Image 1 (tube, helix red, strand yellow):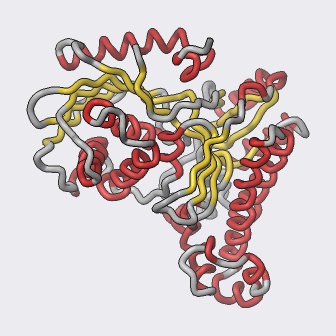
Image 2 (cartoon, rainbow, N blue to C red):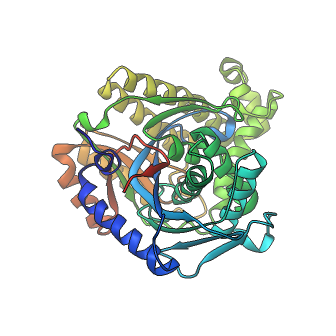
Image 3 (spheres, one colour):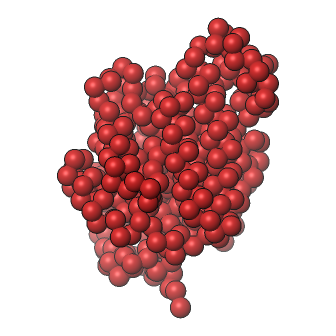
Length: 412
């Protein structure tokens, strides 16, 4: 029988029990005792398919992973929410009588707390005072979306402390995205939050982003004989805002040629029939990025279908096609402003050399700097990790498990 610990943490279950003891102790020291405390967890996520497709209403394939944010929380008296993260100094506190957005809080966890509480109330959910102590294994900058995991954890806490666990996973993601967009000040799609709140392999169609079509896949990744690795190349994310912003802007510029706001609403055949005029109107790179959108939007669906059919070899071929499209057409593996820094390109080239025909690899997430993803046969894993960490540093290769549960209460 699989316990909740094994379901959440796989082979790492025993050490996680000790971590939850530390969580209990941290809560007790911070808030003077742990009577009536409850425990919660929300996972980080890996983007599996659909690189830069969600912002143009495309399809994605994502997976929750076993690295998570865990929290201990309890209801209190008064009108305040207090949150302490083990990894960061200071305490975040908000007054529930004033949930308006604060310009001075932008970019802080307090902004996320306030925004989540506001949106929960706006949607008709109960919100009351609570204390929360968190510990995270979703490392910041790892490409596994630590912010989304934190947001989903807080919604999960509110759901169980004050709403009998009735905030569903889609609503939890929408609440989280709202707080990040409006209160934290970071524009983002819904992919990260949805992956963390739903769990497992999840196929999402954002054609109508207010009502995304979500399908949780039942594929048993543990049985496929491969490890999911994310390699952090240690690239510098500074001054890359313009690079990231240019991708949706250029895709939407192509869409506007056809009188549409998003590429998902453009007919692919009509697009290819107008390449000459599009080059003059939007430029070659925008045309190539639109080509990538059509490719990866389709591949995200085909990858999901391959997993549902149990065709892991076919799935890997789709991953490789997606990676080639990102490299050649989307062009988000290095920044044109810093061509001497090509950690992602180097990691992808090394992975191709080490795995050959046996694995699959692609850029992971936003690109330009950061992480790549690789599906590595288990018999090659030790050598792969060793070789990658020789170049990118010890601990740079994360070996992940796919977690079926999204944001959840943990009985401890």
